[in-house]
Length: 399
Image 1: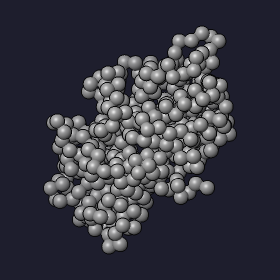
Image 2: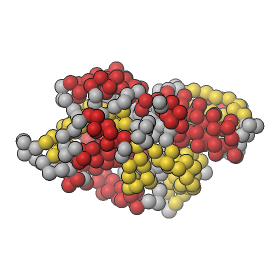
Image 3: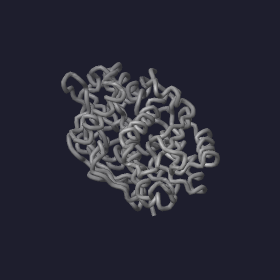
Image 4: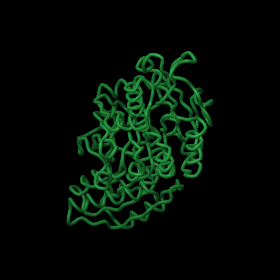
């Protein structure tokens, strides 16, 4: 995988400043645990790029005499023990004020006790497993919860199909997606039937055996969840290779299976695929167009930002808000209070707000269809199917 030149020096440890400042300046230390190497590195790379782009474009937003120092650690992928070790080093040795990043939900779960014990405000830029945000009172999530998109996808499926097969990756977000989809599907269609299901190993890239099993069950549609990135492209290839579209079987799922940055590699197989997600690069919003323009200016016309880049961008907006309100002198509990009440109408994904009770994000969920626009495949938003909603599981299970 080709990497942006500026990323090379950030592979394992990165320390850099948002502004040049004298030694007497007030410095806020931001620790980032993310995934910059290995087969799952794309989302971490986009997270890193979005952080740097935000800081470059918002230097003037910091109070006078305040700068932000970012210290990055590479967890290499789903690795709870390593992530916990890295977070502990950032807290104890580097004495960070805020912890952020965290691509993988198991890594977030491992870090939660440290955040609680050390009272370190921790801003989740990914880590979507619904339960993650409930694991520490010092967690605030700016990404999504994994019950949201599949729940609203299930509600859509209930109106259009009677027989559905479920195929999900075998880890916490996959289990969440299966449960959420099935709950909404059965609520909306008492005659609907789940004709089969399978949980696929997280490490696999060969989805043909699993989709063949789905085809044998003869569903009208297959609901799929896999982590965004290369796995989405792999499952799309398997769907096309098996001719499931020609057999009249629809592929539906969360936005992970038609991730904007992967669509150019998928050929025409995704055309007509219906998904639900909280963000589309094609979204017709001024803030989104401005974000896209800034991204492409910084990283090249052919670079397409993932939804993880948008999560990181918005999280940095919340972090900078907390820094400004405290003039750079951060108190952990005051920081959490500011973050849990944060809201803006200027996110690339539309209006967002952190729900004060759950510390999870409220945002729109969009029904989308892959279409060809100006010769390129894009996720076209058809309608808002969940308006400013918080993850249903989180809402039900937060005291």
